Image (cartoon, rainbow, N blue to C red; front, top):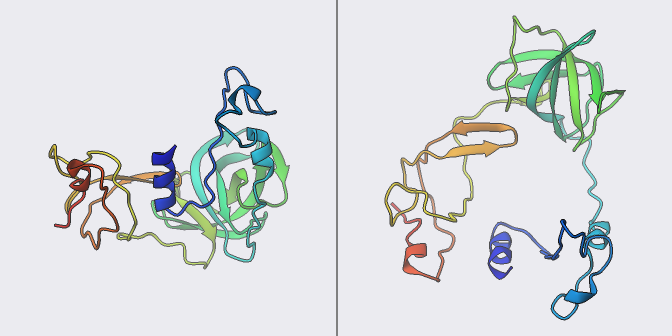
Length: 219
């Protein structure tokens, strides 16, 4: 718990709480389990979940959805599935897609759990049918980003990120990733190969062992 908690705090997590449960036996899930009170003083899982703050999304920012797949529905046509991350979308809204294809379209219908919907909000898993594109003119792929038309949905060839090296991922037994290393990046529903072109700084090193401290060195 101490090790995992420390790692979570390093990437910005706050108010980290751990709750011991047994899903198999159903212990400490819906009500406290008396036999662990000698070493666990917290609440059961459902009580902790009930205390989660309600997230209020800013619906004024542009719509963004990561495409997770596509399917054909009889009477409807092509449906593109995904999760809404920001903004909101309604039938009739104009959208654009990047980066595997560059196309514009209009939202024809929205489905949530096989039911028609009039609007989709952040965190909704939806299926969208589009007007203005066909399989012969544009093929959306898993990982594509759909967004409000004119809101700046563009692909990128370079980005900066903060990474934590948790294991030996380099090519040598005692080294970590260096410039030229080619990790696979998973972002939303996309996976793509990349290349480290620059290590700008080392934020912190492990003080546990010499091997951990050498996992990532400035080169």
